[in-house]
Length: 295
Ligand SMILES: CC(C)(COP(=O)(O)OP(=O)(O)OC[C@H]1O[C@@H](n2cnc3c(N)ncnc32)[C@H](O)[C@@H]1OP(=O)(O)O)[C@@H](O)C(=O)NCCC(=O)NCCS
Image 1 (tube, rainbow, N blue to C red):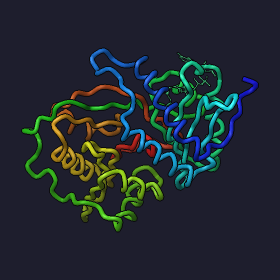
Image 2: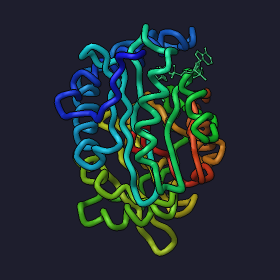
Image 3: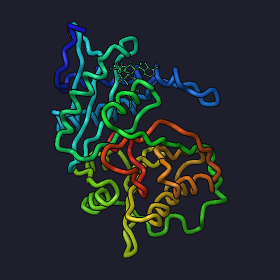
Image 4: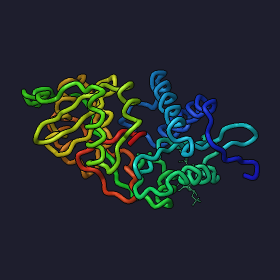
């Protein structure tokens, strides 16, 4: 371990970090995957491109939160994190398979945690890796089990008015989105909204009784959903399901999101557990389904 260098991530590290991350998560998926699930596969090229774009964005907004572990000039691990209005978020974190369990993860996470100084709240979406879970527990996070609902949608269960009062978002809705973020999780996404608006389709529901928005990925799945109340959150999720494909997944659902479990169950999606929402200084958001990396 004496030759390990912990240093800030640079822009030219991003492609190597992306490959390392794919390798580490594929190895983890192969280690923990359930027999009734499809075999884990390497990341698709469009996912890799999105990963690189997001990480370059974070190097622009939060260079002090992005760190690399290097030995003899080779990257062995990294952690990227961001800080938004007093909330620290761990975006992604991995150590090369074969090098895990020797303390590299602790060193690189400790470096990223220096970026959390002054933040009363912290959020991250944890994998099922017991090594990751141990690191987060020791860093003061509380682990909230997450669920995902997936399968073929029973379209007969979709209410006829699904999609009512939901419209396409425009850049002019960004202030509203930030306000809804603050209501739901105590901090706006700020500079992450323009990035998400490039990558995802954005929809809004804004009425006198409640406001909210959702980002939908190119396959129509919810990539983030935030609302000021349950009814608006349900309206946004129903709209996404009605417009989405025949097979769907609703991910990042905690016990605080019973409204989402009810909708997923109503359309006959199957419920299973998957990782944890790890939180420090805050309770699990209720009318909110986070984005795995930008939370
Ligand atoms: C999570 C990860 C980044 C941690 O890096 P690492 O170098 O393995 O971490 P460290 O060696 O510093 O710490 C791992 C801790 O778990 C412990 N550990 C190792 N195997 C374990 C197991 N099977 N069960 C429980 N704890 C275990 C280690 O002893 C160590 O704890 P200690 O420092 O108190 O002794 C790395 O394991 C990884 O890339 N995992 C796959 C991808 C992933 O899950 N990333 C996190 C996404 S949220």
